[in-house]
Structure formats: structure tokens, C-alpha cells
Image 1 (tube, rainbow, N blue to C red):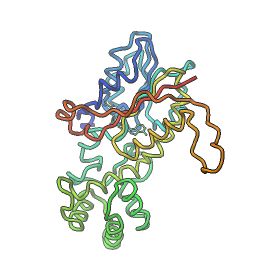
Image 2: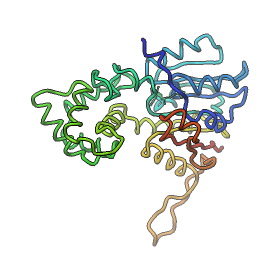
Image 3: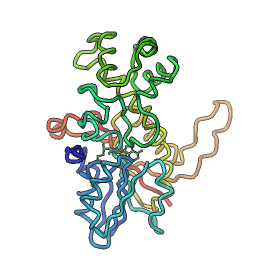
Length: 309
Ligand SMILES: C[S@@+](CC[C@H](N)C(=O)[O-])C[C@H]1O[C@@H](n2cnc3c(N)ncnc32)[C@H](O)[C@@H]1O
């Protein structure tokens, strides 16, 4: 498992700790352990009474968590999807904070064999949990052109989604796309260099990754599940890297804040649902110093909400 030693620089670490408002004897869940940058910093602030629950769907991340923290009596580790975090029987009292630092980790991107990157030739996989669901290659081998185009448009905002989808379907009639290099070459041939500073495969690879891992559904379910797990006053902290995800987080917090949904103009406004969350401040972004040191932080957005009773 060579990749488990690859590094991940935690994004917006100080902001996340401040947002979680870590208390020494508190109970926290890091739903996206990755390589433990945030988890390590939370643990440093916990006393022997504090608890930290660690979760990741990637077996390599979980192996790393076990290697680093299995001996720590304050820590519990679980391999799984944070979409199911409500099913993890954690603590009777409810949690003081949940951190979701979503998307992919640097080790996932940097190990060619995982198939996330168009920079190196490898099997076209892209699953964070390689034992669950279908690989990107299997999706491209079976989906209709219209479904492929829809994925590229929705998750990658790829303007040439239909052309790309048609080319993929035409190509698989003679030879299915099984490798990252084959897909990257097809995209380079088809699109050339259309966007300055962006490889022509960037949008397609991002879209396939989001699709293959069901990332938006997992986020929606994880947000919903966090409501059941947080104690009143507990904090939900989400760092996202894609405008679709950030919009989902923003709308979720708003929808749980007791603001009545907008209805038809000529009718009395619908009744406001009970408020279960309070937004804490506005969206936060990485500062210039962090961006200079870690370009992978560039699209990060952090949002915070507090559970109401
Ligand atoms: C950006 S990294 C987290 C990095 C971590 N905060 C650190 O400092 O090392 C995202 C991690 O979340 C995991 N992940 C993404 N979606 C997940 C989900 N739905 N359930 C569980 N883990 C998920 C990925 O496998 C990856 O390891």
C-alpha cells in the first residue's frame, strides 16, 4: 500500500478548528479522514475524556487511520460512507461537532493506479471505495450517449458534453475505453487546447468522479444525517470544492433555518418549518498565504451551522 504514505495537506485547518469550536472533553466526528490532517489537530485539543470518531469510505484512508490512531482510546474508526453516518450508533448524548471535508484527497489523485488522474496512464477506475459501485470504465462502457452527456454537463459543466459522449460511444464500438490515458487522448484529439491553462480532460474527469462516487447524493444524505447526530449547540462544518456542492450545503442550511419556502405570490406564505440549524457567519475561503502554499485549496469553501434544540 505505497500510496498510504503520500501526503495530503489539510485545507482551511485553522478555520475548520475555529468553526468546530473544539472543547477538550467534546465528542467529534471527522467523516472524511483522508490522511488525518484535521483529525490530528482535533485530537491535539482533546483531553482523555474527549472522543473522536473517524470515518472514510476509502480502505487506504482507513488503513492509515488504524495505523496512526488504533492505539488511542479516544478514537473509534469506521470504514463507510458518511451518507450513512446516522446509522453509526455513536454516542447517546449526540455529537459536539461534525466535519466533512469532501471531495478527493491528494493521495487518491496522486496515485496513478486509482485512476483519478489524466496525468498518468492507469485503469480508468475513480472509485474512492474500489469494492463498491461501478468504475468509470464500466460506466462509459454501458451508458447511453445521452446519459454520459448529462453527467459531463451537470457535474463538469462541459460545454462539449454531447460531442464527447458521441465520440466515447463511437470509440467503444471498436475498443472500449479502459484506461485513463485512452480517455485523455480521445479528449485531447477531440477538443484540442480550448481553455487556457486547463487540460481538455479536466472537466470530463471531474464529472466522472462525481458520478462514479455518487458524491452529490452522499452529501445530501450526510447533511440530513448530521441533524440526527448533533446535540443542540453542536457544529456542522463542511468544506467543499465544487460550486454544486457548495450550493447544496448553503441551501440545506437555509432550508433548516426556519425560513418559510417561497410559494405562489397570490397565496399566503407557507408555514415556516421548525428551525433546526443556525448558519454561523457566511461562507469562508482560504487566505492568500494558504493559496500560495497549497494550490489545491483554491476552490475550497467552508460553511458552518449550529444545531438548534
Ligand atoms: C479532501 S479528503 C479529506 C482530507 C482530510 N481532511 C485530511 O486532512 O487529511 C476527502 C476524503 O473524504 C473521503 N470521502 C469522500 N466522500 C466520502 C463519503 N461520502 N463518505 C466517506 N468518505 C468520503 C475520501 O475518500 C477522502 O479520503
